[in-house]
Image (cartoon, rainbow, N blue to C red; front, side):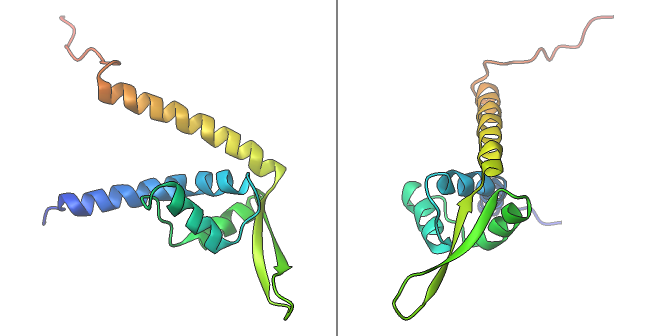
Length: 128
């Protein structure tokens, strides 16, 4: 079997991280105001200095809709009746966002503690 390159591993790590955090990031932005998909994508990219790019927000939004955390509505944006689909967070979505943010911060703190070595675990085997 071939080895995975560091670049491939980094891309995989980044992909997994984005997949895990994309619902939280989406709800965070929608908590500020309703947005359409392109605007959500642009805001994520802008606020992260182009580090956090999400090309596939529709599956995230559909899943959040199915869970009752997001609603969708259409709004006319031109006199020629062109519409745009907007997404808005629900009250349940705000509760879920609060839960995710607390859990994220808790996990981030635990990982930082491990990385910094402040939470070292005894590794010596007990004597018998």
